[in-house]
Length: 638
Ligand SMILES: Nc1nc2c(ncn2[C@@H]2O[C@H](COP(=O)(O)OP(=O)(O)OP(=O)(O)O)[C@@H](O)[C@H]2O)c(=O)[nH]1
Ligand SMILES: [Mg+2]
Image (cartoon, rainbow, N blue to C red):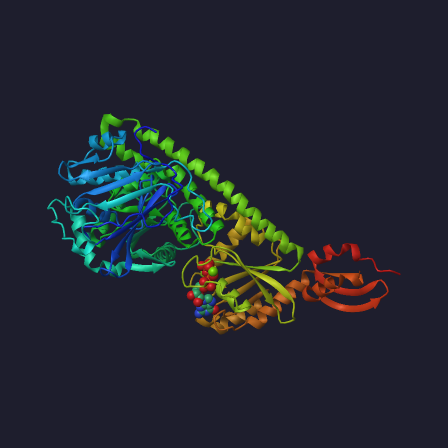
């Protein structure tokens, strides 16, 4: 690949800690590993010379040009303070590109690679250009091959690797001085105002770290933007304020800190910039006033809108949309291999049409020297993404084969399966825990559950059934996600009974119910009987009124998964529903198949049992699947 630095798979290298490096700033250790197409760096700050390291920030570079989960400014700060060395290892070679403060240029210390020329040509002469040049370096990192697919540590394995460290005082090596001996480097006067602000804020930076999904994330200052669409067919179930509030909850789940929000009333979204030009200017002022680092739009932006908005905000902030945010949360949460593959697939499919944006700035800066380069790179990147997408699909197929085998095994013992479905945060997992005594993660965050968890539950009449907890739904659910999670959602289509769990204490409960119904309609499950559970009755403002309302609606039960209220009525309702689903059979079970009799007792309702010469005569109501299994035993001898 011409003019492009390639990182190839390096199977021998599998370590999380790649380099211990000294930073002139408060960073002291940098762990860097590539993941998929992107490279991920964890910068650690040590509390004391021997003590444990606290995650300071995480930077993700990707050929898509985005730096995620941290403020980009932080990376650039390190550039100003004594230069940066970016190293990478293609196959067995070691190449390092460094930014040299003295001659104000990027250079290649170890060997002459063609990319180096490109950096020199676009080399920074001003502070602003320096930032852009650094972005170019990020954009030149490619993982050509698909990553090593280790079972448990897929995300952590390194296929190629990068090193990123600050040189600090010239001449001293990393080994010679430890981080605590480092003198602060003089700061130049040329730093832009935004960076000064960031520097000042650094004092209370430690307060900006939050624990989310088991990791420490940097709480970026986030601003939310939505539109209230009046156009035909554009009206959403949720009012714009409620939708923005939910977006804020999603942002909080991802670890971001919402500092403000705004919306605009429009007939239709602006095809170029989603919001109007005047609103863009207003948001620019808000960015300065609130020191915003990320802007999130409430709807999925088209690739063109995203590009135009990034241009309008001049790269000062990260622009992202609801879909990217949801995908990011799913990415943080994915725990099993299947969920990780599904999320990665959804993310790549989202990124594919958006690839164009990252190369445009390159052409702009580099002028004639690399004309056409951007175009070429888009093609290369698209090819890489497509290859990765098809590899992921193949891997998913094999994972799904396992799931199918599991389902087949389950079908062999025809226990009725009851699926809990509902809006995210409705209390499905808490409810399952209450019913089964299981310990499924339940927390006050959106999308706590991504993988279906199935537990055996014994009803009060002694009958057994399986309860499955599923991924929660949300309005404006990204289509890529529904497609990627289709196999997981198919668990629902296989069930005997659906239980729709509603957070009845939520002010938007009715809208959430409608959103869930529309996803269920897409899944084509109208033939499966449904029970509705109004959960969190303990929290509702007028529980008495709700109980009366529920009594008047068919198959609706008020419960509290937290206190256990209403669980008895729910149990009765499930028994009733399951009995409705049973069929009446009359069978003679040969004496050598005694285990079948115990299955009938466990799953069905036995009306009569008698011992005759050929075996045990049973008249009972049993689940349809079980009756099918016994069809050959159904004749009653004269
Ligand atoms: N007061 C009250 N809180 C509840 C009740 N049921 C669940 N919660 C709380 O609601 C929050 C969400 O519960 P989860 O069980 O995680 O909800 P979920 O539907 O599984 O959510 P996702 O997995 O994100 O789709 C948790 O903080 C629970 O403690 C209830 O009956 N009463
Ligand atoms: Mg859950």
